[in-house]
Length: 84
Image: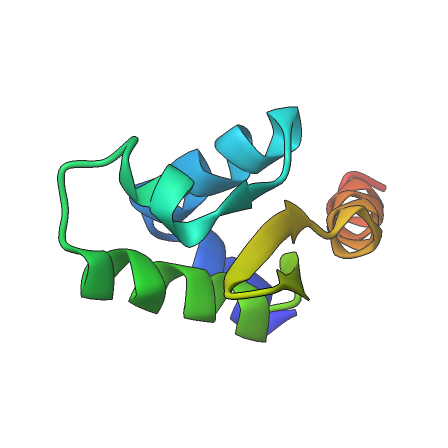
């Protein structure tokens, strides 16, 4: 769970998750939405992947990123237990 919170600590990574909530995207499509270098986007995507917040599927030379709703659901359940 610590990796999830670390990943969510960055505004760019939260914005990437918002984009992926709408549809699956390649790294290039994601990078086009930001004013940062491709290596920076790659770093953010790696952090999200390591935290389990995104999953990837390779199609030819492209990698498609999607939000991992299972981890998001687990996070929501965890946060709800804090309210009790």
